[in-house]
Image (cartoon, rainbow, N blue to C red; front, side, top):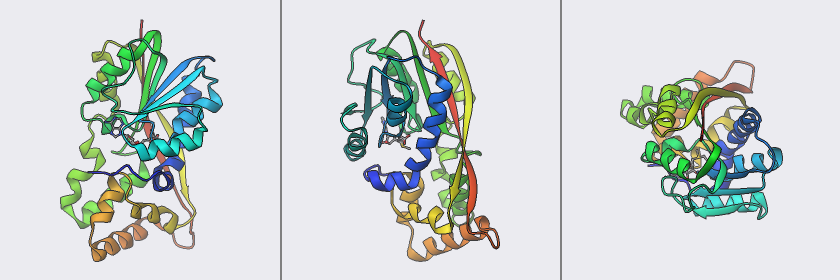
Length: 260
Ligand SMILES: C[S@@+](CC[C@H](N)C(=O)[O-])C[C@H]1O[C@@H](n2cnc3c(N)ncnc32)[C@H](O)[C@@H]1O
């Protein structure tokens, strides 16, 4: 199972991209000013930071099971957010506490996504909004797709670890179905796509050695020779002759529902 205990390492691996996705997501949600926001699975605070700078909230709260990630989020937000170590399926808040409940790249890591959305709905007040996004691991999240395709080609036993296999919830129909099953109204799904440009192969590869999240956890557990073989294969697939930069893109699926 993956580790979530190094905020700085996470930022190098994923946070630098999740901040980009969060920026587009909040822009498209186009919230009014002065709302009470909760971010579930807030991690190191990428989405909370965007909410603070772009949505003019009246308050921001975040929960995550990782105290280490919350420490990074607290530093980043300079005390602006009310942060709690908590599970996304059992929120430490009263009913109807928030106007907007959001979650970035985290719903699939909750053991029971349906129970999670039920609790998100519980803490959202009448007229409020619940919205989430997850990576399109099966296709559009290219830097992870390339990783797992190469890993499985070398080691077929890695297939069950591929996030596309592990997380069937990361598809628009599944996301929409969970929101509708929880009584949310006017449910819509969409996508957000951002460029992920790596300055060179090392910029792509080195964060996989830092142990945060599923793919780096897999890489860390490999023998040195297996890790070298994976690095070699990825270099072959991703490097263009005469060009050091690696230009990929990352797509997330979004889902939004409303409380009547
Ligand atoms: C890929 S990270 C996303 C973090 C952050 N939202 C972002 O956009 O960068 C996944 C997050 O889900 C959190 N997580 C894992 N299990 C969870 C659970 N049961 N409830 C809430 N969050 C969980 C992890 O601690 C981690 O912070």
